Length: 286
Image 1 (tube, rainbow, N blue to C red):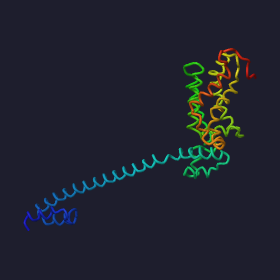
Image 2: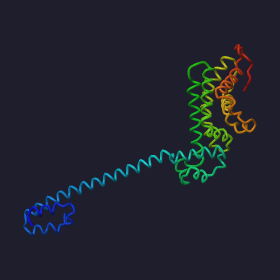
Image 3: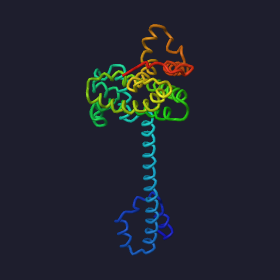
Image 4: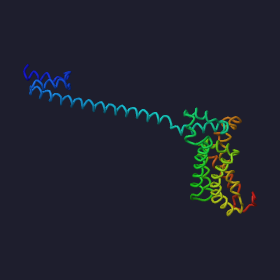
């Protein structure tokens, strides 16, 4: 076999002897320097191709991982995280069944999570209730601070506050129902927890509504009376909707939110201050 034929034979990609140590040993024993050089050349080619194949394999593995991660990310976007699912399940169950009537197993099943996840995220079912209360009351208090403490006269500020609060209640109906319905809760811890939020709201109502009204009309309206009264007036639209729909179908939509806002504002202000700004006798006394 000529040297040229040996070279061609060794350069075949499917040569089963390429990379075989025994074949290299036999070449060395043959003392055929040209044949050894040809083998070494082919071995370098093979190593290079093998390296390319390795990198292609790694690249494919990375691409596959990226595809899997993308699918997982898409699933996560479609399905909320466990903590959020627990909160959403609690909102639905607490609002429809009540806090005390909702079991942790039922809650975990609705949220499609392990039973232990409730305690992991919230410590207990009571901790979950506090989370819902805090989220809702923080939003309500934020609206009061932004609108009642803002610019404008009392009528403008009160109207802005009522309009935003009513829309907030409409958006957060389940949380509103839970907050109101769990007010008579006999757990001292929950009562004190709510009282902490109530103190902040009462202070804002006193500074921004009660004191200005007293200065304008001479009437003293205790903030501990006006604050829950105002909240109840705004919330009643949503709390009594199921009952009113039974009484008169479609009645819950008969009055728009804008008209409802104006009615409450007028009821509060004109009930306390006469049109000609004459000072009335106190309506409420302590």
